[in-house]
Image 1 (cartoon, rainbow, N blue to C red):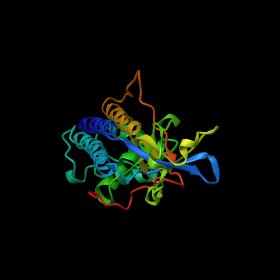
Image 2: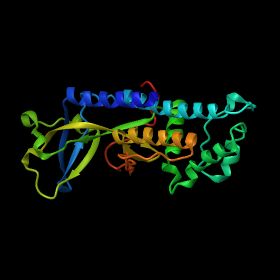
Image 3: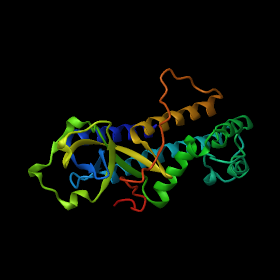
Length: 268
């Protein structure tokens, strides 16, 4: 499946970018809590979030397209031809009441396989909003018709040992324009944090509907679960895995710091 190549290529690109770039984030104490450090996004080097977003969107679109191709092939298993071949899509329904409308152009699919398609629908899960098919459909729609998928970044590797004194001891107002993250320590972090530069890495996250998940954990899970649905629909049995990829943890977007890029159009 082409999506696997796209996802793996993006992960390699992110790793290479972190190896080649030194990301020194301006850092200072929170005036109201000395245990808390405020990290700000450095002006340079500029994080290539737009390019990473486009690459991730291409991978998601590849997954969605593969599901639609599967539906098309299933419609041609028998001698009965579909009435409207151009209206064939892999059905995705969050509510049971949507199901009949979603399959109105899939009448040529054998009944036993239609039943399998019904069994993998999001409404059967505890939280349809975070179901694989809901995510693929929503992210693909966002990427194609609205804006690019929101890919944001968090600073990673923020150990106190990677704090560096501010060169010359001077402060620059523009350094504190873009809040990134707050870090709280149980004990003191030393005078080097007044102010300092923090040598960090960039961890990309996907932001979707007010929550976010690490891209590096989301991509393999999306691919794994799509393949499981493929195998179940075509064989009638869920595949066994000795080393399954866990579902990524989704967390809410913090009120301070990183902001989504939902209003930026593709290509900017």
